[in-house]
Structure formats: C-alpha cells, structure tokens
Length: 311
Image (cartoon, rainbow, N blue to C red; front, side, top):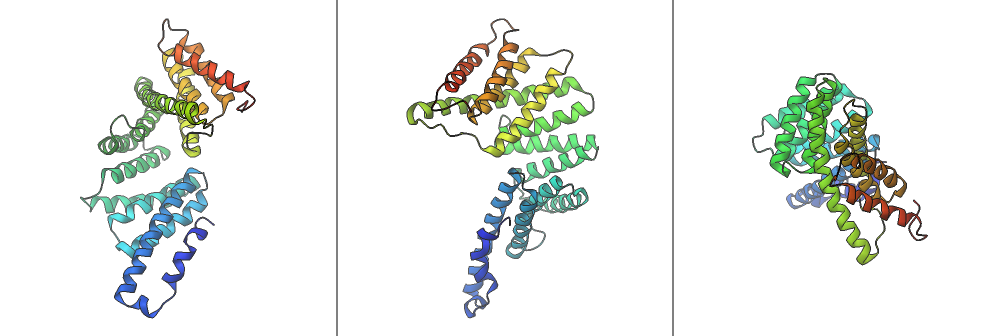
C-alpha cells in the first residue's frame, strides 16, 4: 500500500532475469535502478511519517533498507538513514524493543564511519534522545539532545528551525525533572526562533497575496501539525505557571496565530491572535502589540470577505 504504485515499474526489470541483466552493463543498470528505488522509498517513508501513516511508512522504510544493502552492502553508513526511518515508524507504532535494536545498529555503524555527516549524527542523537525520554532515562536523553543540538548547529546553524527542535525536546526533559527555569529559558529560545521564521513567512505570503492573489495555504500540512503541537505545549506550560510571563505568552500565541493564518484557518488565527493581544497589552509599549493588531484586523476583514472566508 505504501509504495507499490511508485516502485512497480522499476521492480519489473530488476526481478526479470535477461541475458543483458547477467552481463556487466546490465548489472550496473540494475544497481542504478535500485539506487533510484532507495530515493523513492526514502521520500515515501518520510511523507507517510509526516502524514501519520506509520504502517505504510514501515513498508517503504523496509524496502529502502533492503535496496540500500543491495547497492552499498551491509554495515555501511548509507544504511543509517533507513535504520532511522524504520526506528521512527516503529516508535510511533509502540515497538520500543525494535526501536532500541535499530538505533543500536545505526549507532554502531556511525561509530565505525568517521566520514558520517553532521546531519546523520543529529538525526541519530535526536532519535536516541526521544527513546531515552520515553523510557525515563532522562540524563542520557539530555546528553543525546545536547549532541543533537551541536550537530544540527554545525549543519544548519544554531538559529535554524531544525536545531530549534532539539532545544524544544531538551526543554521537555528539564520540565520533567522539575527544572522549570531552564525549561522556560529553552522554550523562550524556541519561541524566538519560530517567531522570526513565521514573521518572514507571513511577509512573503502577504506579498504573494497582493501581487498574485494566491490564497492557498502557504505552509506544509505535516509541518503545521507538528509545529502547532510544539507551540501549544509551550503556551500551556506558560499559562499554567504561577508566575506567568506575559511577553512569552504573547510571542507564542502570536506564532500560533501566524501559523494558522498561513494555513488559512482564520478562526484559529483569530483565537490565538486575541490571546496574544491580551497578553501584550499587559506590558506597556510592548513591541508585538502593533503587529498582532494588524494581523487581527486582516483576519477580520477576510472573514467578512465572501471571496475568502470565513474558514
């Protein structure tokens, strides 16, 4: 179900022996087709995971690993990405013992491969950190997330939204340990990074709307769901705190309002925008008050526009 339609045509020449396929040129052609299958299966697995279709992602990741072994051989660094995809799919399905085995294989391969990229190191440590968090090994999780952040910073930069995911996961661990000031500090950094990123996206989005009249959602659905969950966690953390930080509430709620505006859900954008405005107005001359008011005015105008809303 997960990948059959995409790979069927490529499988026919691979699984049908011919005189040519037994010759050197034919074997090279089959290897190239298997390399193409690796890319197709990897992208399919990533897509299914982002959509929450974990069982289908599993089949794509399994075939990706099988083709990777055929092309690159066993115990090579090229097997690590399929191992991580399989681990992520099994993690979502609750198969933790299998996740542990897969990550152990991936880690062993990485340790034997000095040429391993920062991106692969980052993904491996993030997966290990998530596993250790779930199993209650919090100190080990913190070490993994520290390595995750280091390698992600080397690959993408410390202010990247990719690196930001490591800050968030580390903050969750500190919150579990009751170290709230550290958790709050990390959540604040996450909010700052995403606020800057979403503000840029919103500006580009409005330029496209004004020049091209493009009103389709301008954020990826899977990323929207993941980011919404992350931002809601931070908002609930701050709102439940006895010493509420109005500036942080305003920043996170404004992020959610921008996110849902970009996703063209004007009702949610209005709700979170109102929360952000209430928090910002508790701080005299807060620099977010004006942009929040501007976004709310835009949403309200679109809700009354028969061409665009309400959503």
